[in-house]
Image 1 (cartoon, rainbow, N blue to C red):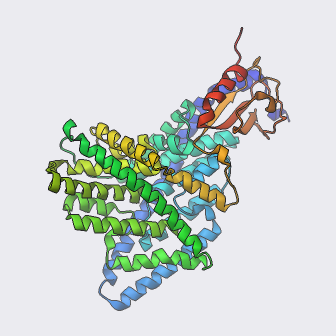
Image 2: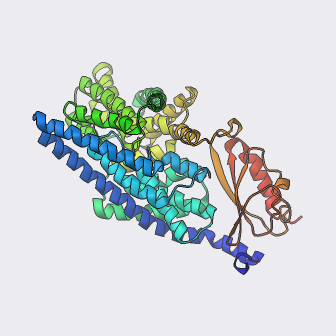
Image 3: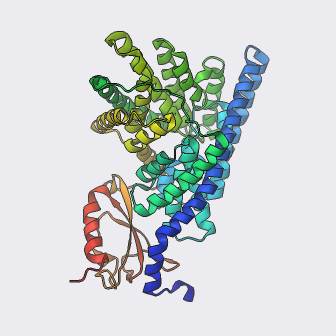
Length: 525
């Protein structure tokens, strides 16, 4: 009992040092998450090589081709078994991260890490059009959760370390430490807290050091942009942004429809449903192998090969449709990299058209490819800052920030006007609905987690949670007193030194800040 009882000065002192502690713990999370993400990235590279070797070996030989289809069926059965063993490895993993931060689910961190790595490896061997980045974010988040469990941290601090791990995972996957920080705060944690920012930076940088030490420091894309599009050419950038906004909304709609289509055949065994994308991979492997896997080779071919417009459009359509078939099945893997590939091909097609029909300078086509990737990401994910920073880091150049921002803003506005929900928000809602959890309509919209210390002498010191007068849709996530995490019931009496964590919607942020300022903080008259 004595262990859980801390006097106010000690608690305030601990809270004051929590930021420093989180930075140190962030470094630890960065090491673990970086190693896990690098292992996953390395495994998927091996998977790509295995698949390419198998397709080369089998091509043109009916017996070997039949044997490859048998292997694909075996891979589908193994993935199905993994999904039954640990359902939380399904899909990209980002909705699972968001649901856990919001307090709805609590998966086993080591089962997710093990299942995701093996499942992702099997899917890429099979050739499914899935990316490594979403899973890397989930793997990093689970690594952060594992550290929190080992250090016996309370729930709120565990959420902080999960966010750090998510940041480290994206950093290691893309060699993009700044984008890792931005995505973790903008999309996963949904709150630009200084406390979380510093720890995420520490985790992201350490993970990037590890990744760069193994895979090298070169950017993921080898685009060379010799010059910037002049201001008189920005009308083409705005039009491209509008186009990406429309196509991004279309992408989100079709992605959800693909999941619905699989649900309509739920009368079939799960193994049969998982076999669909694997068998499609077998057919495409011998007819259109470019669309298999994440799609890095497609971007390289677009940049170095300069294919004709018809080829670009065929590959764009093929990659889009097969990505829907792959992700809709629920197989372990993300949409992150495939959607960037789609963005690149939209930019390539658009660039070809404006060069041939509008007299646009051919030397700027590479710029349009890069710009379209950021714009489509902004329209689909609705995280424009992350998209701009991510593409800049992936291409190794920050010189085109203005054009990226212009197109991303246009795409964002168009997607909003079309009332297209951010993709991960929709996927999170579906994940929770599948588990019988329904988010109230009044609580819709982006959420922020706010942490605050009950100061001695404040109005909140000695009053109950119910008496605080919090906004109606505010959820009290936790109340931590010393090393003890209390159940946040309405009649719980708060004391000076308590660490209060609340989740509040965007529209109630101002009201919440007013409560914290006038009731939680102590202000001498």
